[in-house]
Length: 273
Image (cartoon, rainbow, N blue to C red; front, side):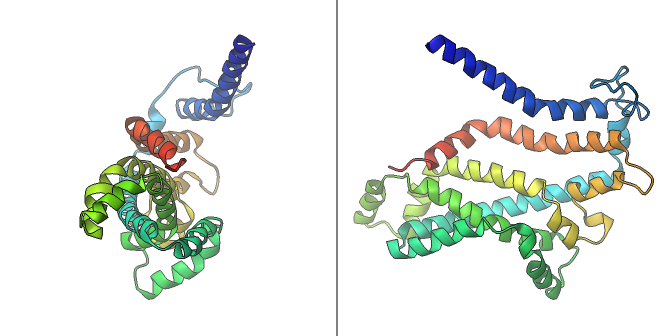
C-alpha cells in the first residue's frame, strides 16, 4: 500500500512539474526561434534552427537602463521594508495582547485590498510631493505595498521565538533595543531572508505602479519596458520572450542561493513555540 501511494505521489509530482515547466519551455522555444518561425504551420514547441538573435537584439541600451532602474528600486524597497517590518513585528511582539488583536488583523485585512484600489491616492500624494518620474516615487509606493506584508511575515516568525529567552534577558536588565539587536535579530535571519526573497519577487514584477509613477523612458522599470515590443502593427514575440527570460534570471538565481533559508523561514513562521 505504501509503495502504491509512493508511486501515485511521484506521478502527481511529475504532472505538477510538467504543468509548471510547459509555459517556461514555450517561452524559451519562442525566444530561440527566428522571427518568421513562431507562427509557422504546423506549430512546433521547439525551433528547427536555434538562434540567439532575439536575446542580442532585445538587450538594447534602453533595456540596460530599465534593468538598472529595477535593481535600484527593488534593492531600496526590500531593504527598507524588511528593516521597518522587523521593527514593527518586534513592536507587536512586545505590545499588550489587546493591541496585537487590533493591529495584526488590520495588517492581514490590508493584504486583501487590491493594489489597484489604492493607486489613485498614492499617486496623488506622490504628485503633490513633486516626486513623479523619480526612483523615490516608486520606492515610496512599493514600501506602502510591501511594509504590511513584511511586518506580518516577520511577526509570524518572531512568535516562534521562546518567550523564556526574552524574559531571561529582561530579568538580567537588558534594554528593549539590546534584546532586539542581540537576541531577536540574530534568531530572525531565516525570516529576514524569506521576507526579502518574497518582497523581491513582488517588487521586481510589479507593473501597475511603475506605469503610473513614471513618464519618461529613462525611468521605466523592466515590466513597463516590455511594452516596447508591443507595437501598433504587431508584437515582436521573440524579443519579448527573450527579455522576459532575462528578467527572470536574477530572481531565480537569488532563490537558488537562498532557498534553504527561505524554506526554513517559512516553516519556522508556521509554528509557534
